[in-house]
Every structure is written in C-alpha cells, then in structure tokens.
View 1 (tube, rainbow, N blue to C red):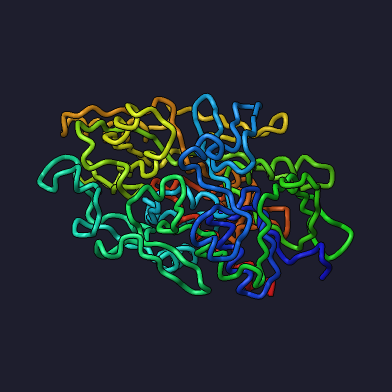
View 2 (view 1 turned 180 degrees about the horizontal axis):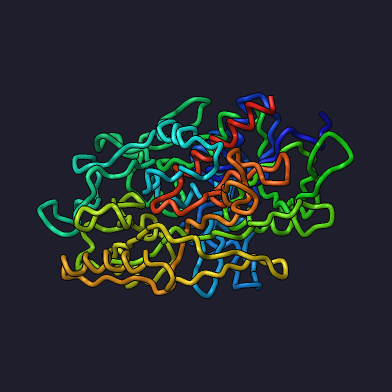
Length: 499
C-alpha cells in the first residue's frame, strides 16, 4: 500500500468517528482520521503526548476560542479555525456543533440514554436485526465508565437541591440517566488524578468549573482519550486541523475514492486515496460533504433521499430563575439531573448548570444572575418532516417548529416547574439544537433512505455514514448512546468484510 493510500479514511472524530477508528484499527486496518478541529488542551491529551493543543474557551479564551464559524443561511464567517463551536442560523431552527478532536463529546452533558422508543431500530431495513445495534449499549456505558448519580453521591449541587422528593408534579427522575463523569466518592477524592491504560491521566471531578465548555481535567469522558488513545499510531493516524472538501471516485487503481482536504495550518491542499470512507463529521458537515461531492464531476453517485427526513431531536432551551445563588450553578456538573412531570417519560427534561462560566469576561452583575439561573433543556421526538438542501455551496435547512407538537409539550413541562415553585421560567422562541439528525437516513431502499443496514450508501460501494445523519428518526432524548451504538455496528460489520 502506497503512502498516499489507506484502507479507511474516517472523516470526523466525534463519537461516530472515534469509535469507527477504534474498531477498525483494532481489526488490523490502516485508518486515517481527518479532523478539521484541533486537539484540545486537557490533562488526558497532554498525558497522551500531544504537543500541539488549542485551549478550551474559559477565561479570556472565551472571546477568542469559543466560536469557530457562524452561518446565516448562505453566508458564513469563520472567526477562528481553532474555535470550539460552529453555529447555523435558519429561520425556524438554530444548530450548534462542536469542532475538535473528540467532536461533540467535549460539549455534551455526559448523558447516556437509550432511545425513548424501545422499538427504535425495528422495521428500518429488512436485513437489520435491532439486537445487532442494541447489544452495544452496555458496552459503551462500560467503555466510558458511566455511573448513575443519586441523592447520596458527593455532589455539591444536583437536582435534589432544587426539587423536593415529596409528592409533587415535578420530581427528580428515579433512577437518573447514566452520567459519563469520573465522580469522587468522598471529599478526599476531589480532583484526584488517576492514571489509566497507556498512561492516560484524568482527574476526578472537583466541581470547580470543569465540564460545560470542555473538561480540562478529563473528569467528563470525551472520546479523544476513551477511543482514540488506545489505537493512536497503532493502526490509526489522526490528522487534526485538516478539513475535507470533497470525495471523488478513483478509477485509476484499487482504491475506490480520492479524499481531498485542506491543511488548515499551512493552507496546503492534499489528497489521500482510500478503499473505504466513513462519514462521521456530524450531521451538518456530513450532509454538506455528501451534497458537495455528489455535484462534483466524477464525484459520488446520486442519492435520491439525500436531505430528506431531517430533525433537531425536539431540543428546546429554557431557564428557571432561582431567588438565591445557593447552591451556585457554577459549582456543579454540567447537568444537575433529569426531572419528570407526573412521572411521564416524554418529554425528556434536564436541569443543567454553568460550571466555568464564572471565569468568563462578563459584568459582575450578570455573573450574579447566572449563579442563580438554572438552565433547562427539553428533548422529544420531532417528526423528521424537515429537510436539508444544498444551494450556492451552503447547506440550508427548512424547519417549521409550529409543525412539531413536541415543543408544546416541552413548554408545558417547563411551565409546570414554574407553577410548582412559584419562580419564573422562560423558554426560547426559536428552537436551538445540539442534536441535529437525519438527512442521510437508514432506509429499506434508495427511495426511502441513503444508507442500508450496514451503513453503506446506496449506489456508492465502500462509502459509509456512521454519525447522526444516518439516524432514521429522532431519539427523543440525549442521542450519544444511540449514535455510538450505530457507529459500533457500522464499523464492526465493515471490519468483518474488510479484513
């Protein structure tokens, strides 16, 4: 195999990309991960020997390193190629995505929840056995060492500090979801440094502002050290700050594709040949690349369903305004816990927190208000009736929130908290999602989906979609576990046929 050819190119390094690279490298394949963001400066990454790292946006770095790119429809502005967040503004929806080695796992709340619909994977494709995907749920929770929080854990701030456990309409969920945090068992373990396999170090949570905008100590699990570290330079090569621009069919040799990308550090244009390509760049960027590459001369074969069945997972952000800053939302995990209204599973409502926001360059008065503000996020299954399209080299989304009944249910659940507590709540008017899904969905045939039961793109042999763009429906709760299970399934099936 030549130096400009690999077995598999993985585009993106979030949950889907890191897991794909891990599974394929362990199977003996030569894998190249192309990630447009940088490695982040955390204790685990430093212990891995990564020299070139970008900071998380705490303190004054909030001004310079929070935003990467902002898109307003067809117009976009890149502020800092090493920024953590990318935002898309559409008339009916706002979308936020992460940019880094580790992708969205740096900004996730660390919740591992199975789909709200127990039959989520049923009847998606005649050759897909749901158990083949569902079997990975427990493995992922084990890999990440997820735990459930409870009242008796060593937590200075949690949902039990804010909601009574006596009979009421809004009560803490029991049990709580699995949380992907390294928690202390006692005060003596706060901030304790632990060394794992391969010398990777991380800290137990100290509730000192670590987590919301990235975990500097590694208390929150991120896939850069969970899945990439074990295979780094052992079958998997990660090239950060490399942005893929298009994928072209290669008719000159054994490789199926030529992947074109830009080195964002020096501006060089490069090409790598690969027999197989896995799209794992996150829904928005996976769709953009699929659209762009299908329009290139010699590019991908047409995908009839590309852009169809798109959603935002019913994400709706709100807030609950407390009278006191005790306990402060600065001293907590990024998520305080889930509450249920009348014991109902739907919608999925979480209280979250603002650890690290006290370091930001904000006016003192605003910080005081934030310390007693409890942010809320609701999720539920939107219908997938929205669509994504590609015009003038830009990804555009048509989303009408008024056609999504889930938002009324979330607003009612937030209103129930206000009625119970007598304290004001607020819900945003235009939904903001960090969980965009679909557009390259799993389907029974090319008329009903873009990928088959193996994650392979119809009409494009050797091309796979492993991220949330392939999800056939909204998960209705935090989707990371579902995405990770699908990526495991895609990568393991590919490994069986490629080795």
